[in-house]
Structures are given as C-alpha cells and as structure tokens.
Figure 1 (cartoon, rainbow, N blue to C red):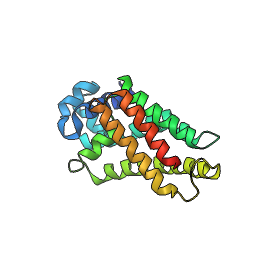
Figure 2 (cartoon, rainbow, N blue to C red; figure 1 turned 30 degrees about the vertical axis):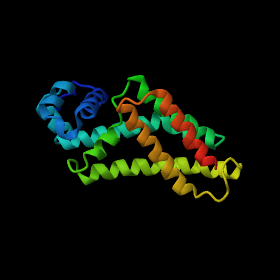
Figure 3 (tube, rainbow, N blue to C red; figure 1 turned 45 degrees about the vertical axis):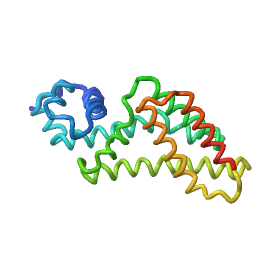
Length: 193
C-alpha cells in the first residue's frame, strides 16, 4: 500500500520557486531545495525526478499563478488601451510591493545557457500568449479609434511587452517608482500616435 504524501504540493512549489527566484537555477543546490521545501531527497526525486524536473514544475506553477492573477485584466470587456494601462500598473504595483523577488521567467531567460530548451520553450510560449492578449486589446483600440488605423498591432504588442519587461528589470535594479510611472505614460502615449 503506497504511503500518503506528507507535504502540500503547492507549498513545495512556492518554496522552491522562491529559491530559484533568489538564486537562479544554477545557484540553487539540491540541498537548498530540500531545506526550503522540507522534502527529503528521496521524496523530491520521486515527485519531480531531479532538480530540473522541480524547476520545470516551478515554471509551470509560476505561469499559472501569473495567468490566474493578471490574465483577466487584458481580457476583460470592453477591450482597449485601458486594459493595457491597468495590466502595466498591476505588474508595476506587484514589482514594488515586495511580495515578489522579480520575475522567474526573466531570471530563467537570463540563465538560458544553464537551463534546458524545454524550459525556455515554456517561457516563450507564455510570453507569446501575453503578447497575443496585448494584440487583442490593441486591435480593439484600433477599431475604437484609440490608436491610428495604420499601426501594426503585432509589432506594437511586442514593443509594449518589451517595454514592460524592461520596466520590471529596472525596478529590480532600484528604479524610482515615479520614473517607471512616467515610462508607462510615455509608452502608452507612443501607442496612440
């Protein structure tokens, strides 16, 4: 008869994700993960296979959490620039709140030579979905006359996404909130031109 699990899967993923955020994939040892998650090595290997398997589970967990907490902002009705503004402000509020240590996905791609291509593909897929949500809002904004009809919404969505990622990195580096707020205003003003 198999033993019941004596740990909470979500708690394990939260603890491991925190380690990967703090130290990066390469900087986290199996012993760090065992200590943080309170799993023994055997349980960790049975549940996740290895450090990379746990990291993949953390990436999936992180993506689901982001999607659950902010994905609805871009998809709410009516679609348009207001959703994009609210999405940017939400992400910036979160970055300044102290609740997170940055973005696990940005940390992961900055270590791209240390992680498996499968992990990078997961990150890229998530980012592709976020850019698609931005584009849907931009297409609606174009129909409503909020942005010029000649704007290429695919290119603009990628530009906005890149701007947001840059702002998150700047916040992690200590940028003042007023500066970042002004960048949001300038970015959205550029979209309207």
